[in-house]
Image (cartoon, rainbow, N blue to C red; front, side, top):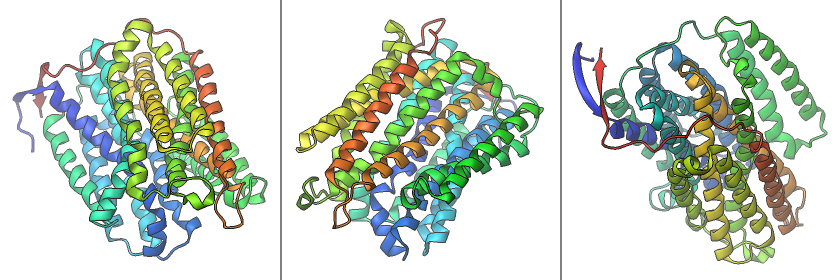
Length: 479
C-alpha cells in the first residue's frame, strides 16, 4: 500500500507519540482488570481461584511474546511487526469483550499478551530513528510510560465499570489499538536495517515451557502451599527445562535471546534491578487496591469503591510520568546509575511508610506518590543504560529481555505478597492487617536489595542524552 519513491518528512514527535500510545495501551491491559476480578467471578460463573488466570495468562503470554516479537522485529522490520502486535491486542480485546465463560476469557488474554512486543519494538524504532544523543532520553520516557500505564489501568477501571459496564474495559482498548495500528503504519518509518537469520523455534518452545512451569508455581503456591508436591515439581521442572533452554540458545545459529549479552555488566545488573523492581511494582498495584477496598469493620481499610481505590493510586501514575520525563536530565547531571539507585531507595521508603502508616487516606496518597517517583526514575534511567550497552541490531532483544524479566519479577512479587497476606487470615476469611503490613515491609526490603544491585551497574561512558525534540524531523522513504 506504500507508494514507491515517495519521500515524506515525518516529525520525530509524531513517531514518538505513536510509540508512546502503543505502549500505554498495552500496559493498561496489565492492570485494567485487577479491580474487577470479583465482578468477573459472578459474570463468568467461575471461582476466585480460577479467575486469577485472567491475570496470569496475560503475564505468561507477555513473558513469552516479548522476546519473540522483539526478535521477529529485528528480522522482518519493526514497523510491520508493531502493527501486527497492535492488531493481535485488538483481536484479543474483541474476544474478551464477547466472552461468556472463563475459558474464552483466558484464551483472549493469551492473545492480548502478544501486544507485549510493543515495548521492545518501540525501543528498537527509537534506536533506528532518533539522533544518537537523544536515544536514551526517549527510551527512558517510553519505559516510564510503560509503568504509568500499569498504574493508570487501576485508576480508569472504576469510572469505566461504573458508567459503561465491565465489558467496556475491552471495547475501549479495541478502538485505541486500531487507531494506534493505523497511525503506526503511516507515521513510523520502515526499519533502515534488519539482522539476518531466522527465529529459533526450539529455544522459543523451551522458553515457553520453563516460564509456564515457573509462573504456574508462583501463581498457585499461595493456594497449593509452597511445600506441596505440585509446586515443588513445577519449580524443579522450571530449572531443568530452563537449563535445556540455555543449552539450546547457546547452540542456535540465531538465538532468540543472545545470552552472551548477559556477560555485559550493564545488561545483567540492569536485569537484576528489573527483576526486583518489577516484583515490588506488581505487588503494590495488585494488593493496595484490595487493602483500601476492605471495610473498616475489619480493623483496617477504607471501604473504598473501585473508582475510589483508583483515585488513591492516581498519584503514582502522575509522579511516575513526571519523574520519567526529568530522569534524562537528572542522569546527565549525576549519571544514570545514581538515578537508578535513588529511585530504588525512594521506592523502598514509600513501601516502608505504607507498612507503618496506613490509617489515613493522606498516608496512602503520599506513599502512592513516592512509589511513582521511585519507579519512574528507575525505569527511565535503566532502559537507557541497556540500550546504550548493546549494538543496534540487538536493541529489540536486549530491551525485550529487560521488560520480560520485569514481568517475571512481577509474578514473583505478586506470589510473595499473596503468600504473606493470605497466611494471616481472620475467621471471616479476610486477611489480617498484619499480613498486609508484613507484605509491604517485604517489598521495602526488595527495593533496598534493588538499590544494592544498582550499585553494581557500571558507569555509562557518556551522558545519557536528552528527551526527544518535538521540532526535529527526518526524511523517511516508504517502499
